Structures are given as C-alpha cells and as structure tokens.
Image (tube, rainbow, N blue to C red; front, top):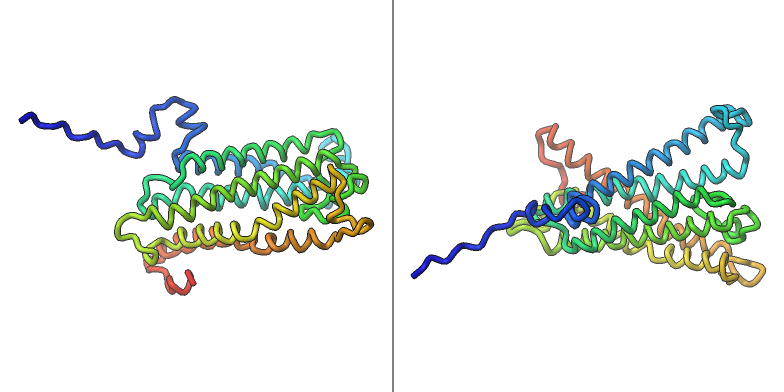
Length: 301
C-alpha cells in the first residue's frame, strides 16, 4: 500500500498572511492586526482630542487673548471644543484602546483560541469605527460648525438648531455616535462568544485570567445599557430633521427624557472604561509582586 500524505498543518499566521497588503494589513481578519488598528484609531483621536484640551486650557488661562497668532476663541467655538473633546476622549479614545485594542489582542491569546469567534464581524467592527471617527472629524469642517451642545447633548439645546446655530454639526455628531455604538456592539458580541465557546481544553471559566473576565464583563454591561441611548439618539435626530417632538415641551415632549436615556447608558459606561483598566493593573501587579492575585473569585463576583 502506498503511504498517504499527511495533511499540511496550517498555523494561524499562515492562514492570515500571504493574501496581499490590503488583506493582511487593511481589511484583515487577524485579531492582532485588528487590535493594532483599534490602537491606531484611538491614538489618532487622542491627538485630536488632546489638542482640543490644550486650546481649552489656553483660553481659560488667557481669556480673549490671541492664540498662537490665530486670534481668540469665540464663545460658540469654545462650546464646540468642549463638546468634541468630551465626546472624543470618552467614546473614541478610551473605548477603542481599552476595549478594542487590549480585548482583541489579549482575549484569544489568554484563553488559547486561534482567533475571535467571528473574524469577519471583527473586521466590520473596526471599519465601522473608522467611518464613525471620519464622520466626527468631518463634523468639525461643516460651515455651521461642530456640535456645541455639550458632550451629553441635552435638549432643548441639542434638539433645536436655532439655539446653537449647528445643523449638520450635531446631525453628524449623532450619526458618528450611533455608528460607534454599533461598532462596539459587534465587538462585544465577539468578546463574549469567544471567551465562552473557544477556550482551550482545560481552560475552565475559573481559570480564565482576570483581564478576560473584566473585558467580557465590560462588554456585557455595554450590550445591556447602550440600547436606550441608541434609541434616544435616533429620536433626537428625528426631532432635528423630521420635526417630531420627543423632546419639545411645546408639543408634548419632555427634554428630561433624553437625560434618562443618556444616563441609563452614561453611568454604566464609567465601568465599561474602568474595568479593563483595572484588569490591566491586576495582571501586571502580581507579576512584579511575584505573588498570585488575592481574592480571584471575589473580584469576579
């Protein structure tokens, strides 16, 4: 009998590589490449948001004074800077880096998985974030100026264009937020499915590193809390474009409705950002202390 050739064993690197520059580095399904893309988007947006913080601090230090030869910052532009700085740092810097970058890079490696459960959904997630970030940057360049209703977007200031003078600025801001939330909904589904279904043999739930636990906990909190804000954003956009009255008290609406919907998500969002950062510290400290983490199960509970 002729000896049958053994099937070639393909490593993860070989399965992802060799398809050309666009497939390997741009539209990649490799979790490591996607993690680096999340990191790149977060760092780029941090430069923009950080420069806005610099402009805000300079204006506070020397109000009404010329700024680097450009002239002083008018009140409307100052409000736009505050709004866009808050939006960028919370949604387009902290979340892409702490959730998108660290989660994508480390979760498969820490549980012994070859990749994320849904690699193509993972790729769609990062490119949805890229589109959202682009829309947010474009909103800075529209003729009527960027959104200037505060990063919390309270109506009626955000609901009536005449109050701020912004029409497309706030519209694009709302669209960017909706797409960013959609991006992390896709990412959260991937994190949870990967950690639950793709663990290596012997990797029980109670053996998972704390970083994995806290990343999927943050994802679950995000998935459970973001729905009302997405609905509230659509309602606010309809108020502005179509003329509905969800937040207009003159026609039976309630401006406080937005605050309820926003903070149903806004308060859990604090933990969505904080938990991955805490998890990183809890992975690093035991290594340099040369001791296992104390109270593993208590931390998880």
